[in-house]
Amino acid sequence: MSTAPRVTPQQAWETFIAGNERFITGVSNHPNQDVERRSELVNSQSPDVALFGCSDSRLAAEIIFDCGLGDLFIARNMGHVVAESITASMEYAVQYLGSALIVVLAHDSCGAVAAAIEQSGRTPSEVTEPVSNTLAPILPAVQHYWLQEHRETPYVESAKVEPNAIGRIHLQTTVTQLLSESQTIRDAVDRGEVAIVGCQYRLMEGRAVPYIAVGQLDIEVADVS
Ligand SMILES: [Zn+2]
Image 1: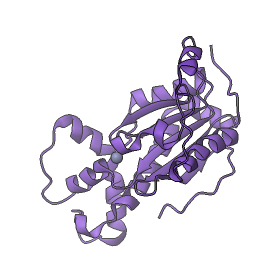
Image 2: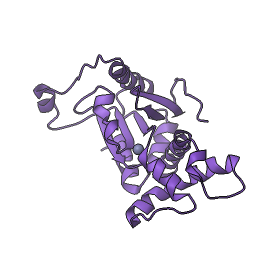
Image 3: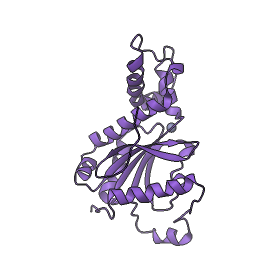
């Protein structure tokens, strides 16, 4: 049985990003983390936000968005690379849990982006097959960035690129890919019930900066380039 969203994408975003503001300024409330909340959720969950982010240990979502049990439906992997299980998880949140917002969370100094840059060089180091396959969807972002300035060779020199800018190109690709692979999510966005926001998190500041917004949402986004 599908579940309709309880809030608008705008309301979901405002609650979500207010938690990040509290975290940034060091006044986190740590809500929904007590015994009462735990018991309340035993038989059901209704997270208004689904989050797909990088696995990075510094991106602990409930901490940086100052929320708790039952608030976020989360899927994470290295470099936030779309895979069938990820698409399924986001679809599940939208269709059955009534989530009104999907946040795709990238971050600066991403190890997966750095590895993708290294793999795009003239003499890439050896990596295992699962790692190679997972990094593969990040490589086009590296090439896209590199070929804007350096058409003389396809082999990327890491000293000449801006990894966080490449991360933002990959973030954009991730959002696009999630949409292209899920008709359920596309339809929900089309009905105005769900929006997707792509953020890049700044480790130093603790701020999730929105760069991409898809759907009925009135927010300011920063320039990807
Ligand atoms: Zn990362």
